[in-house]
Image 1 (spheres, rainbow, N blue to C red):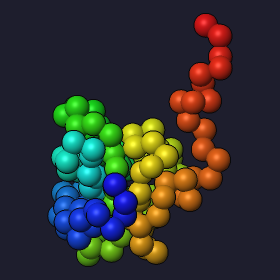
Image 2: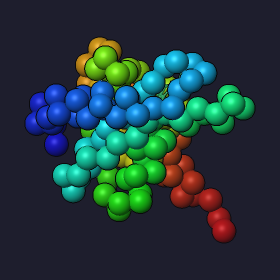
Image 3: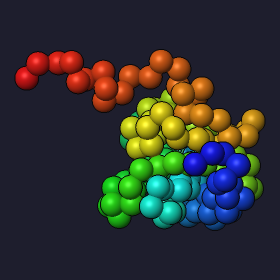
Image 4: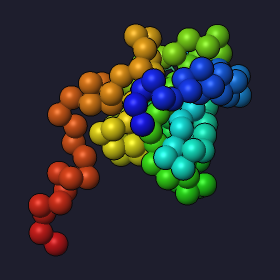
Length: 135
Ligand code: THU
């Protein structure tokens, strides 16, 4: 599916709404994520922080957990947003998680509008790089 066939407005609204459920008392930076799958489903997640700080779960982690839990297929479009509805750039770790959940065709919204995941994560390390290993 190409970027202009995706209902970005709907995904942004979902991400904005779920950002309001975030547990982010340490950073005071709530984030919601919403993704559209190749089966037409929408999966969402919010960030969950922890007193140990380093254990913080990003919104995209929760969204990808829901993707697997619901067997919702492959991500084709994703957005992370603050509660004001402003699209955010996903962090580096989440770019790596996103490419595994959506492949190189995934399109990700952000402050500059939707972009291909491979423009956000150049020369990615993926499951394909593991294929040549013996054993
Ligand atoms: N955060 C996300 O949920 N997703 C990202 O891609 C960037 C960062 C969260 C983690 C932390 O709870 C807060 O934003 C501030 O970094």
